Image (cartoon, rainbow, N blue to C red):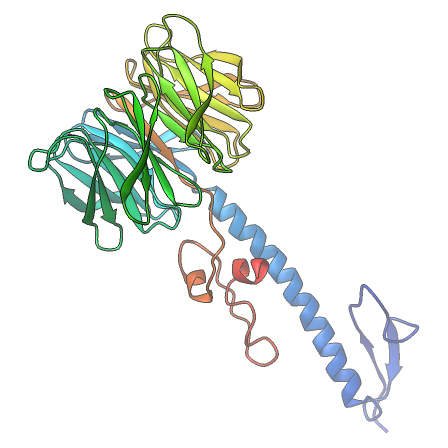
Length: 400
């Protein structure tokens, strides 16, 4: 008989025997007990690795949140939101205006009013595609599935004024052109991707586009429309009216104005953004007031006013809802507002005439195993055997 030895198993829920250590002869140890012990140990080790990996994925994703700011001087400033410093300046086209991310965060689309749409690779912060345009592109929004970009055109030299171009983001080719009302400048798409809303300032209407047919299905009368944002649940759209000093709330089911918030006389609301939880709307009040109004969306009342730089215009909110980034066109800066204190916590110098701002979207969990190999997800490839169909990436296993 061989020399006896001690085997200790890590078991947090139950003990194989009444003791955690057992003295067993090597010839008497059953194959079944060995297999059970090895399986138990490796299973728990995998759980620990998955937990650690999930934490690494989340930390990696959160550390890459950036704000992209268009400057009329012909550049895009890239702000690292962890330390609020400009980490890159990207030359684009003439008079850049609108900016929007693809939902996976890999590409940033910038409208250059006088000549083109620039497509930026967010990993390298370089322009990888330039889409020609002689249509004065301004506002832009991208569908939730990332397949199409909708670009507002204020002047179309060969097709007539006031249209929306639809860009296939796979080919970066314009695949449709939609006529809207007079003086469009901004656009927002519902969370389900079925509708696009375009405020038309000169007509004082909001054109509603069916994205499945790329046709205008209705027009909502509303005074002096400009900026627009849609709530996360898709039920309401908040639309600013610079001339009227108001914010209109659109019921997207009925496509009617459900309420109007008066901000007071001599106020010029422009940009608007809504927090990820839908509880607050942040509205930039342009020159001469130069502040941001905070609206409680439950009561549709102004609950705070926050002084910022000169001529605030664009506004965007971080995915966690803690930071609001405001472009100050008249002072060449971006103000950063802490949503918990309603105070400006940083002022960041950027390019000349910052207009619009977009922030890296919340990381999306992959829906297919192949997607785990891309977009910064942590790959995890355990050995073959009982684990061969598990752990192709931590995020995939975690969510599915």
